[in-house]
Amino acid sequence: MTNVVDNVNQATTTQNVVFQTLATASGKLIGVVTLNVEKALNALDLDMVRAMTAQLNLWKKDSLIACIVLDGSGEKAFCAGGDVRALYHASIAAKGQVTEEAKVFFEEEYRLDYLLHTFGKPVLVWGDGIVMGGGLGLMAGASHRVVTETSRIAMPEVTIGLYPDVGGSYFLNRMQGKMGLFLGLTAYQLNAADACYVGLADHYLNRDDKELMFDAMATLDWSDTPALNHQRLDSMINELSNQVDIPKGESVLADSQDNIDRLMAGSLEDIVTRMSTLASEDAWLMKARDTFLAGSPISWHLVNIQSQLGTKLSLAECFKWELTVSVNVCAHGDFCEGVRALLIDKDRQPQWRFKDVNSVPTAVLEQILTSPWGEAHPFSQLS
Image (cartoon, rainbow, N blue to C red; front, side, top):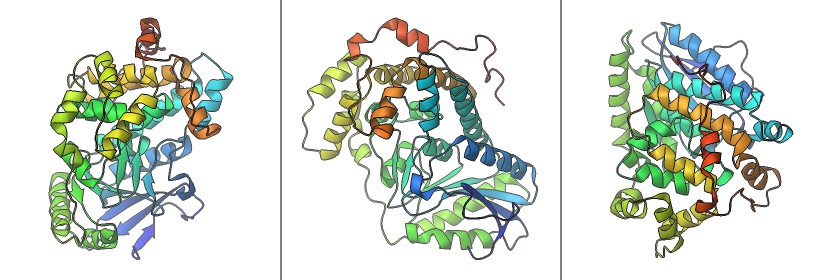
């Protein structure tokens, strides 16, 4: 991107998020957001969320900005999720209480996701490498989600005592059959073909096509009409997609839809029993089984309850439901123990609050599902 010019004072490589603008032949500008924490796989912290929200709101109103691109530094990840260590330490210090840190982080993260979903102008996410958790929340909100031969996409929250948030209540429930429930319970890592199949990606390019894509975007005839810009960007990426050297390949999930629907049928207890006795020659399915069985029983219940929301909730209502559940899971669920085992002590031996699916009391789930704000929920008027 040699013709990228800085749009926010002097962008430096020490910033966790870098904002730049790309000049185009049409006179319009493309706003480029680069997550710049390569060592942490571009995981999001609160400062990054705030910086992105502020800049995107400026660009949304700027008539010169025709399109937004979100990208990650380095070759390993677009964004591996949220940096949850601060939430962990705050929750440990206030054991059993909903913390201000959790309220603030999740509210501001979800507001950013909602902003992307409702941005109006084209938003392209270059979903190369790892795209997980909070990273998928960003990508799901984009209008043009591009994946590559290196993309590895997942909602792995069940492994840390959470559940698929950042809009998962909306996009997982709109997938084919029981696919959303399967992805939420097993943390299965989708490749590009899988992502396109379930509707998490719109376009496939090769990693080496990135500069070609930016060059083509710079020569596109951008207009003042967002709908026209969406169409022109679509056509341009489709044209590039037809020229890739490395093919997208076949989706394992597409080939396994019927089997997945059978595995995820019935009650949660039925699913646990079925997965516990599952034997298959497919290594990917056995890995999904093992990840599921190692997950938090509280999380199993939350993912199952989430799947029963169906498609009746609006996007705003989904984020409202998630904000309640997320802040409460930090206080009353398995979040702290999951983060301890995976990220703090790294012993990968979580001691979940309850040993199996039938041990989780209804009262605990009701506590997690009850808004700590009462009627004054921050997302009562999300817009």
